[in-house]
Length: 299
Image 1 (spheres, rainbow, N blue to C red):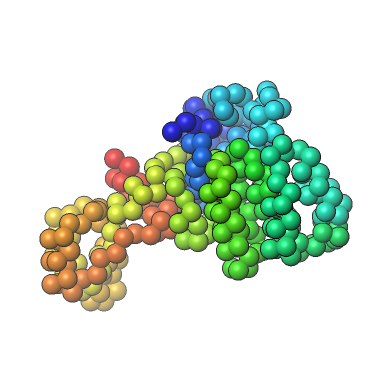
Image 2: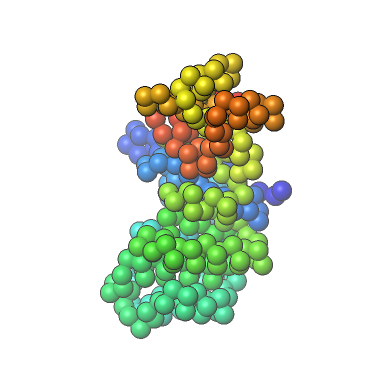
């Protein structure tokens, strides 16, 4: 699959601190990638560098083979919606109208549909809208732009669960009809897990996971039940983490687990469940235990 965005050995330093540290990663053309990690891991910095809003200290960035900073026409192929988006203090309808002038693939019909879906107050000044309505304006622009590379950085702040589901549904439906490269940074991992075709996890400015989401399923499993049974079942397996309360315990082990082992687990009254994407990210982007799991699963 052709790469729409390629970063090679990109670092970004702020007064001696590495926000990004020798990052090499690519994002395929026509794919939805989750950019995941803790606050301050470097996700927003990476997105700003891709969209030319910030310069890399070292390394190269190419969008469809060209440096976005040096080519205005490349910048027009990208839409970047971020949680702290700042607009001129004009009416909402003027904000959306101005956006339509910038993006050559703008779809007015889709914009109108999204405006109705989110009940966007078009006649209100942008600084007078609620946090959720402000986020909805960004979502309208991000989706209706139909930009070849679309980046969403926590785009849903202030939106309730129903509105967030509308966003996910509209994103997936429009992507199916008009594939493009979508990069989605979010902390609501379980909500978007089914949308993601690829997962990139950043920890302390470094890429620690870069894999298709399907490959991550089954890489780690949670075994739970009586402490004695868990201990016996996991005795000859690679164990990443253990937890226990009284006579009960659970352990995260390397997968997959074959049918014979599954049958043995049932005989021992053990439950085996795949680690969810959110659990996986917590372990890989979290504390020291997470770092250990990252190294073992990435091997």
